[in-house]
Length: 395
Image: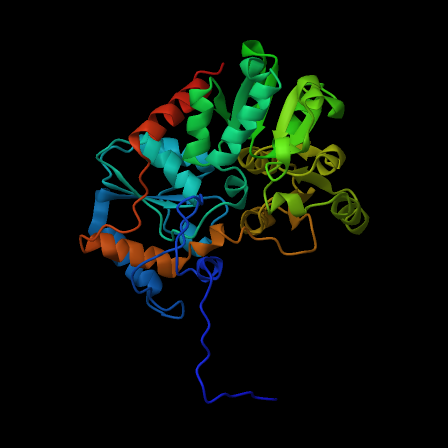
């Protein structure tokens, strides 16, 4: 090994971007934070489980821990409830006696919980760097520029924004302010049906795949009815004629996990496992969804496996933590559950919530120190809640 040394210190000034990537600075315009003050216990500490139990017991009913389906098993073990992001936010709102809501998920989920819970409750995210790449793909400034482009094309008044739950509070607020609604992967068709009753076009944020799959697969539209707005190109990379001719204006965003699955993944697993059922999330690409046997939300995936016959075989296209948990759960029923792709595909930001962060959070709260509180400002909360309430009113 060749080692290079120098007698003089290097005069290198790190750029703001370098500091951000190193986690030493925060970007206020980013959906996710990057700072996590405090000293975390070592991940090799053999007493972590005991410490988490002790801190949770000390807090008693003052704390309510939410665990998203994509979390690690070591975190799920301490969750009072598990579920998808919207279910967990509603569960928190239904627990008004809990002073602290510890959300083991990602940043936009904790924001939604803060929006739906009372002012007396404090929502805590164990690691502020647990963001969402999809949510980060649509900023308030970018969406405002998009709306300007729709206005210039003369279609803003007939366009209804529909935003996926996997979006920042700012985007939810924009949606509420402009007469739109929020959707989940379970009720996206209902949300789009409602939107087309209000206007002629939909601006779907921020996941292009859920929007396209719902429009084409569930509503009978064609791929030609959809255009993709790229926020990194002037006018979204579209002409005014293309915007006026589209029914679905899809934001150029995607889930970094579900976007990895390909048609090759589907073909390969069918060759390797004869008789396998391919079950995927609608955040997957259109060609993957078209080639799958079953398509649905995380809750749908779980319920489908619960109802599956003994001895059946399943390849699942969703986050790996959940797939592994389902494989272990249903092995006793002789149901074979495998990951759709050969490549390991965890949600990297979701996995930032680990046992050391959870222990640090619970012990801090038990000692009376509030850490990593997620707070949405009142104006943003007001418009975001309006959009969420429109979703809750869907038939």
